[in-house]
Length: 265
Image (cartoon, rainbow, N blue to C red; front, top):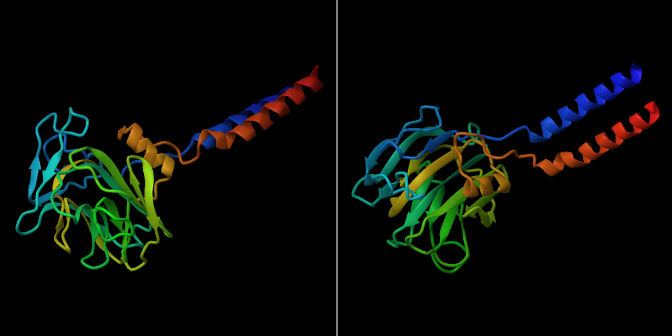
């Protein structure tokens, strides 16, 4: 009986180990799919946006998947875009991730489709030629400078662009892959989240936007890849602890069970 209890205990411990390895996953802090023709928040957190101007809600079939809806942002006199009630500072949001599926219409060379703007040192993502690479491509502002993807942007195609601001770095992802990285500014002391432009600097986006997401954490590269390849906002993105992390423990547990069985027999 003692050996049997030991076997059962080992199985329970092993199951707990595997369960821990699969635990985790994160859900959006805010999500805007535009499926209902409004700027409502689909995350369930009630962070509905307010349209300020220059935003047109597309009909069914205008979305990046050819089925759902999207919005079109066009620079207008006054404020362009959607104001979202997410505000705070680096103490409230020490790490954040935001992005969207976008289609640039080829107009202009500086335009931001998402902005965490405090009127001075901003965290933004869009297009910006002031980085290190030649050409105009997707870029993120770190708070003190620009990091940009190499090459030049191709207009009129849907791409998923995301930026991760952690405590130590800024990472720009295009279609699920890391495109550029750099330092992050500690000077961003406050911001208001904005879709369709950077209101503090009149850097309006000209093009289409769909499936805007905001996470109050720094997503890993595998989580960004998950969003790109298999977006399913009704469930958390993939675990931050991949399956192989539990594999050595699984093998060790199986070896221990085999040894116990030999003693019993």
